[in-house]
Image (cartoon, rainbow, N blue to C red; front, side, top):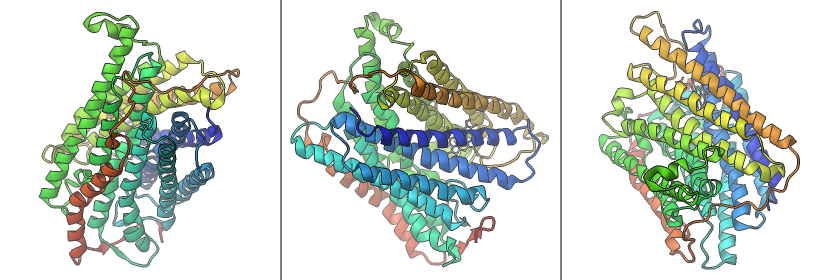
Amino acid sequence: MLNSKRLVLAHFWLAFVVFGLALLLGEWQMFVRSPLNPWISNSELYYRSVTAHGSAMGYVFPTLIAMGFGYAITEFALKKPLIGRRWAWAGLALVAVGAATAMIPVSLGLASILYTFYPPMIANPFFYIGVVLVVVGSWIWVALMSINMAAWKRDNPGKPVPLAMFANVAGAYLWGWTAVGAAIEVLVLILPVALGLRSTIDAGLSRVFFSWTLHAIVYFWLMPTYIAYYTIFPRAIGGRLYSDEMARIAFILFVVVAMPIGVHHLFADPQVGAGFKFIQSVFTAMVALPTLVTIFTICASAELAGRLRGGRGPFGWVAALPWGNPMMLAVTFSFVMLGFGGAGGLINMSYQLDASIHNTQWITGHFHLIFAGAIVIMYFAIAYDLWPHLTGRALDSVRLMKAQLWLWFVGMIVTTFPWHYVGILGMPRRMASYDYTNPAIAPQALSVSISVFGGLLLVISGYLFFAVLIRGHRAPQTDPGVYRFSVAVHEPVRLPAALNGFALWLVLMIGLTVVNYGFPIAQLLALKGNAVPAVYVGAAR
Ligand code: HEM
């Protein structure tokens, strides 16, 4: 029984409305930079749009999904009302007000600095204040997740925390800590300049703080997806989770190794030494571990489901899987995109190979394939799974759901594969227009046009998604029954403290951050004369 239905629905709907608007901006960007459109007359409009699209998709949308899903998990998994519901509403209000506060200067052309802030460019202070409010709103969620788990553990001494809640809290802690980097950057380094108290900024140091946030944020985006793989997918396809403990280890690994790796975003920046770049490159390789554990465990869980459904022989279980089930389809597509995106990521994480694709369209292709593809397709699946429990109405447009998921998958491949290709040919990212009459660029024209078509498929899919949800609100009332998470083959009866809590792992997470970031930050702080004049964007001041 969910007591906080309205709270969860409010988070999901706000997230999806933001997503729907930003999706249109994405397709507009794709169109104006393609040969199908003459050069954009005012390229600043392009950067305005990319800032809005990137900030909405990168900060607001996934944060709201993680928060809403987290509240639902808390009540479903712990089987008790959420502690601090009023605070949760306050957190949502902060995110909403923050998003609006940030977007107003963006839409006025006073903050076209992209979602990575890009100092020494400086935007209108309200852009940063808005981002800070979004983060503070999400920190309320982090605190609530921790408080709810602690209260449950007090009431149930020695019992294993339900896996979904354990994973949810892992995501919350990871976000709570990783957001600190950008918070320091904004509050200490950027805002004083934006407010006119200083006129120079140490751009190198700022970017190091941002990289602290920039990579682990990806794993924060990914957490709801992984939680769904482990705790919804096996149940939805009629199987069992292969191993509860493996799942816990995967989430713990994310908490520990996702943080101290962000310097791989600075491979081409001069302010961090080669040694620390190499160390963080190695740590980046380690973050593949939890994903490999996950792929193994989820495939094993799928095999169990296939065999329980009567599949025989080495491959008969694959045919026996419920391919008509939207969750089955979503996870399959998600895995395929994760596979391609992960393979591309091997190039990005390598200190040497990265040089060949650095700041090219390859990067845009890579993160859209992983984030907008593998991750977001599971956000759809999560909504489909939860909706009847949130609305008390059946979600019966299964054909529409399948069409929507297929379109998202095909659209994402058609959009991002050509991006990877033109990236290899050297097309830079974050450019408003390209001269396709130039013989050096002409061969990229066809690929970019194909991407525009892929984007169109994505827009259609995005709006089909809305159609499914809205139809769900209008469907006849039904009793969806008790919400269930997947059950493991061997449900743990007792667990070692390390698999049932985070004390040790938080120490490691913070310790590794200090080891991997302490020296570069201290060195930059000690060096004098690094600050450069701020470049105010638009009429930012
Ligand atoms: C119709 C679908 C979409 C299209 C056509 C699209 C297109 C684009 C384009 C053209 C850019 C600018 C790239 C550049 O100038 O280098 C961009 C940036 C970005 N997109 Fe999308 N996008 C779509 C959906 C999404 C989704 C669903 C997400 C995530 C949920 C997303 C996240 C981002 C982010 C974070 C950026 C900022 C990148 C930067 O500042 O370099 N996009 N997108």
